[in-house]
Image 1 (tube, one colour):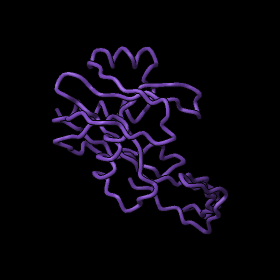
Image 2 (cartoon, helix red, strand yellow; image 1 turned 45 degrees about the horizontal axis):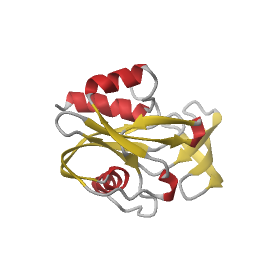
Image 3 (cartoon, one colour; image 1 turned 90 degrees about the horizontal axis):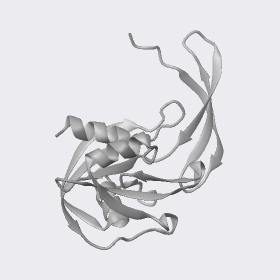
Image 4 (cartoon, one colour; image 1 turned 90 degrees about the vertical axis):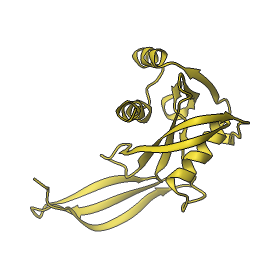
Length: 179
């Protein structure tokens, strides 16, 4: 059964920077009650599962909001190129963070990051036929390191909390469903 739509009455931007916008939407529910939603508008991003046939290439970097370093698949957006396709974003992020170029880039799916409060989605790609080149890290990625891991090692890293990124774990599931 489909829920009736909620009608937006008005919207107010309460915060904005280069990477995100936070808005408050006043709404009317199907029964006539009014409500308020806080929404984080962020551009969609790409996550790449680089697989060389035996190992997965992952990156680790400091994540300020959670004050920790975690392993994850390469991922990001091109906020200065809003018209870039998901494939262009994936190709760019893979090269930037790992130095890898993929001979094959196959889309595995699209997931929402946290659709209870944000409209941001992640487009997930499997990258194979990999060629190593030079990384081109941005200022925000200082300290990023990369390494390769077997699936057994990754499973252990998830259990130990070394991989805690939901998008990375969701991407592993999509990878398994498409191999």
